[in-house]
Amino acid sequence: MSTKRLITIERHIQEQQKSHPSATGTFTSMLQDMALAAKIISREINRAGLTDLLGAVDTINSSGERQQKLDMFADEMIYQMNDHTGRVCAMASEEHDDLIDVPVEYDTGNYVLLYDPLDGSSNIDVNVSVGTIFSIHRKFSRGERGTLEDVLQRGKRLVAAGYVVYGSSTMMVYTTGNGVYGFTLDMALGEFLLTHDNLRFPEIAQYYSINQGNEKYWTPGIRRYVKWLQGIEGEGHKPLAHRYIGSLVADFHRNLLKGGIFMYPGDLADKGKPYGKIRLMYEAQALAFIAEQAGGYASDGIGDILDLRPHSLHQRVPIFVGSRDLVERAEDYIRKYDLDWQESYKPYRTQDAILK
Image (cartoon, rainbow, N blue to C red):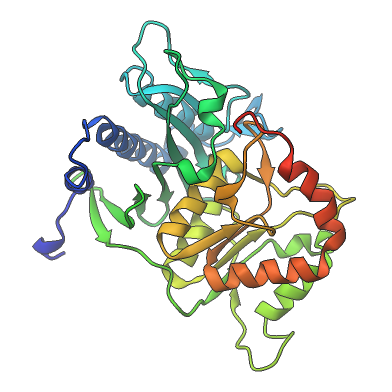
């Protein structure tokens, strides 16, 4: 590696802070703490088969899924990294039913942290890439402690978002609304080093990612759109290659680097997941914010995910995220062919939110 590229994530975050003269350093420290948590989680994932951290436990998370040992470890690590710092007023995790309050013995701060501690945990036992997703909102309620309305904010109000991929190497990607940057963990140094500067979706997309096994539940618009991606519908269109890992972070990361679209649509109105599977607060908002900063776009099939008014902590949402032209074309197909699904989804999409 050239010495010109030896920029640690700590140095990069501090350099970014200089562009905000009024910054206090609190926000910078939060991002540095997330980087440290990622290093610890990465270490345990790489040693999981040797330390009895593979497999599931007997508890069920808020989404009705059996929790994995590494899920619980990652969740606790992120919590402990942030509960005592005086920087956050509240936290929310996919693994918890309710808002996570800061312990009363610690001071609170001006930020809210949301996180999916270990995305793709069903892949843990088979040694496939998994990840962490996080996002940060500013507190705006007047009380000392954070409230649900501090958490249930539109994605447009995010001040930072990021993810970590634990794969052949560990990579952390983050944005504070001023570009997207990727850092690879040098295991020998124990440092995240800048390897991907100002990430952007390539102009020419290569891949589409969707669970083809769910095709029987797809709406007519999604079926036709996937045929278009495959070059079957329409004239003169080169087909995209299909790649689907089943870890949202890993699929999104590949498509960010190579160009493409990730989709988890809503099912037919009378089937199991009419609103999709992906969690708005812990997954979709963060990746939508990152995609926008990288020149991409994220939609629920009707409009911008970042414009959605959340109405619950564990709200699910259909998602189409990646290269802007591909996402906008998906919207076109849904608008044209999926009127029944739109009618069934819109009341859920627009129901009253805590945050007006």
